Length: 255
Image 1 (cartoon, rainbow, N blue to C red):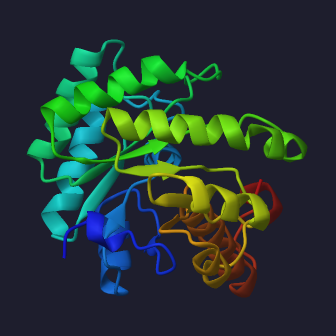
Image 2: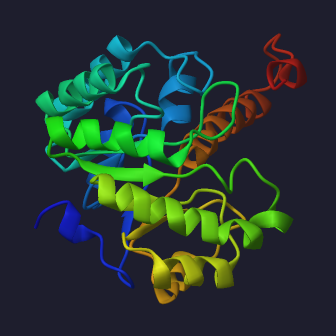
């Protein structure tokens, strides 16, 4: 089954985002159908801030290690392409494809400062990557991440216009992180020309509910990494608290 065919409205592909070879092994071993990195997770695990501050060569190294331990389909969070020109962005995407990556997320947000790239310009970037590779391009709009929830209903038409523009340029999926209202998610799923990806934040509906709304892909973004890091800290504190006097100031270590 191809990676694209895993995107079925009503029976979504679930991607529990990973950040290195170890997390890839864990998620693959738990029965995942495919793997996907999350930019915040990869960056955080290597001591970088999210927002394309991680050197692209280092991202390639991480991807190569993931590919070395799993042959599951792998999608990579490509952020805003790690380049300033369509040609350089397409070259970077081709580098990922050469490693065996099958898909990318490409966002219209402008890291690290924020803002949204104009839809025609973003479409040109998608077209450049499509002309160079066969990657599944999951076109992400940051409209909902960058605006408060109370305004999201006003952004649906613009989001759908972007979905159409991105589809015409060669995108394969439409990612709307930050959108959590069930009625708005359903509206996007009904009208999008592309299969819809929702980020499963704590505020988002359950996976089952998202499936009933017509979602084709559910990803978890930075939340698995955050949970893992929180768990590591808790495990440390629990072990120290059970071991008696050690000279370790647990409250300080936990800060």
